[in-house]
Image: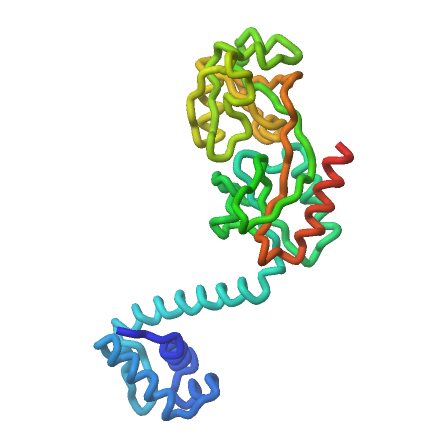
Length: 284
């Protein structure tokens, strides 16, 4: 059974306009074409959709149900067309664990002032590309290299690496820690999107690891004191949590913050976003 969009549009037009004659005018076709199109839809579905009298055209019970589906399908098709042809009226920036930390609100305010015609949307997607590969965003904030050749990226800034510990952990009383302070502890990591693995330590001093895939679960476990975590500073600003304390790790390399995009289909605002984020990180 093949149902075509033109058939659904014809059904909706007949009901909305109230007659085959007016539907033909609205669709820009002949009345005979409207009749043929409706008949072909009824044949395809094997049901009667409309009752016709000399005075009016009304949907049957089945016709009402088909009509509701037809409106929804046509609305989704219209959304698809708008997305493909004029989707540049908004810019979706994806992120996995944290967006830009304390710089997030500054980005939103400056973007609104500088690009009033392009709505900025932040989307959290916990995937290695922060939603880019899934089509959930136009640009993505990632804190590890995008090795997929389908994507390009630019480093827009650096963030300190912080240790996350339970509030009653002895390390929480320090102003900062070193990597060696975490040897012998259990490190909670997200290997898909996280910024830290045991390879950050020398081979003979690596902590044990447990894996997790969500920042809320990560914080919940750390608050119990069973594990510690390490993350980019943006996480501390975006996810303050009672019972969890963040401390800088003095001898750990900073985390590079990258903005990624599709190599063969970049959003027109990509360069503007790169420049704005670079400025925000440069100015602290």
